[in-house]
Image (tube, rainbow, N blue to C red):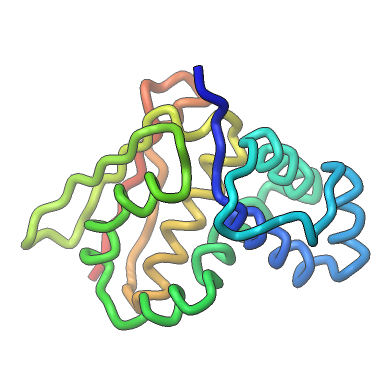
Length: 175
């Protein structure tokens, strides 16, 4: 089996969240805990999923509510991409989700079920999340996608692979 990896841009998003939430002291503490240096992270380089999970565990040790906030923050602060996304709607963003996921992660499968006329989407993520924190961060990320596209609505996690379901399932409803 190939080692599961993700792009550093995601990790940098978490580092930015940590810095904003707990300041330089919190960031330094996290970096020590995961045994890395911030300057070693490059946005387009792939890193082990284990590093991501260590960062998520560090965040969750401060409270699970911060995990969801970190996913939300990361989506909304992807540099120029976050700015450009503001000019598309949630349906367009969801259409690109599968390709965007595959560009950023080398494992798992994402599928989106939605039709042209519905104001609802079901996002299925199979073999994408291996700790509860990851699933919760994705819930926050989907909420961030709605916020950044100025879409009023809700996100609900209906199934969780970590808790024994076959896959993670998120239901997005909007006005």
